[in-house]
Image 1 (cartoon, rainbow, N blue to C red):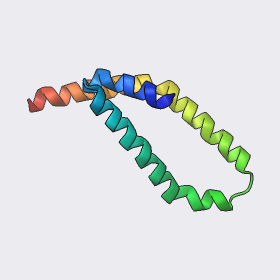
Image 2: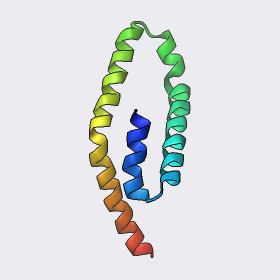
Image 3: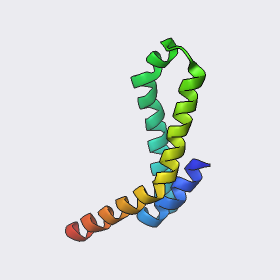
Length: 86
């Protein structure tokens, strides 16, 4: 669900569905890889896995709620940089 929403929001910034889908996929897979490398082993050794899962789910929910604001800010920055460069 989040990936579909992210892609729809990015189409407004990037302008093309294919590029938005590729960006979402790259960021999602990169995030999985970075998370596995940086905290994967530590999480396995840590006690109370359910608590960790709940905390991570709340962090994802907070990020999901903040995402429209972040995309709007990124879009404004993207436009500002594009006008300077082009």
